[in-house]
Picture 1 (spheres, rainbow, N blue to C red):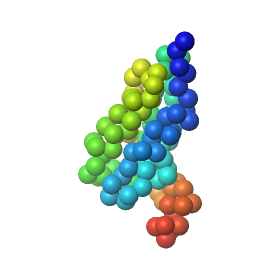
Picture 2 (cartoon, rainbow, N blue to C red):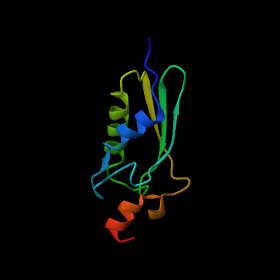
Picture 3 (tube, helix red, strand yellow):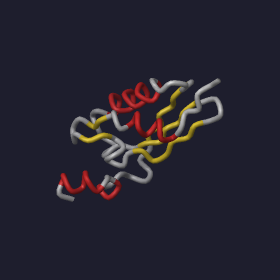
Picture 4 (cartoon, one colour):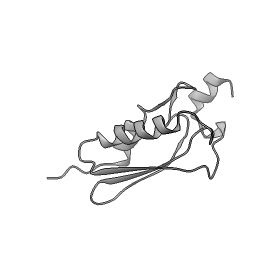
Length: 102
């Protein structure tokens, strides 16, 4: 029987993807805008970065793809970057905003 991959599985994997410049994971920063999983367990992640000029963009998106791809049952992963709407600190978790003094 094929394992059904859930959005929770994907979000848990993405909690292990860090923006090294800020020191927080992409989920806590509010960088994940959407996760879609089709009936074949192909995963599409729509995410942003804190800035379009992020020097770690390639590293972060590749790390996200690898972490999600390591989930049992995932067939393929597509990570799409968008800057619409642009990220702002209000998208981060309360904990992150408190630590950053926002």
